[in-house]
Length: 343
Image (spheres, rainbow, N blue to C red):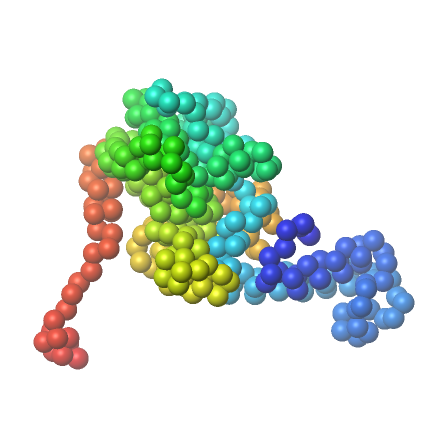
């Protein structure tokens, strides 16, 4: 259960996990108070006592993750053991054949594209990839795609449209790469073209924010008929650190927390505001604790959505996609007279 990387709010869990490991080795639980956990001084814990510790661990885990603050949610979404696009592809995308290059500049490892099968559905899979090892992370620009990444994604989407194949995208990026070379190669233009073209691609598109969903870098592959977030992901116009640096001229623990709260970036916030359509649950304690369980939940949700689009009229689908994004941010302004009359 233990991991090398420990979040601050998980420290009580880490201590309990150490006790469980010691108990399973058959040794005395270090520092276990007599009578609290059913362990007498000098006594070796038995199976019942281990089960009691594990139940306590599960209860604590449920309580901690039921009350995550927005900033803690951001930190969970960045956990190094959290499953990434390639992990989900390996878990439930069968017969996956990866495609490379944008036919204009080169290949961007920060975005994965390829055809495969999810359940009974042939589909194109597009996803951000951050990398696992230090070297891979550097090569993937920590999930921040260059223009060629977005152009590669669009090129493969056009291919999927030609074959009438639905598209599934996994969003996991703090934002598009902000470097000079990316700007020279047309970063903003590449994302803008993706937004326009994805709005009118004539096949179903399903998008899930599996970790971080930052700004246009996320939206560049997230114009879809159905947009969802995993429970411990975030989706916003800017990262908390970027927001804090703009508003308070510095990004630290206090300003980051304040920015995260102000941005309404959690899955629950985005669902309430109508930015997303659904929330995909994760195993207790987050996807990083049970990648296989998280993969199964995500797979089932994707299959359910693809099933619902089977046989749907494509013109109706495009109209609904257009209206979905056209209505974002709309609100009803009431005059003082109307408000007083309703009261």
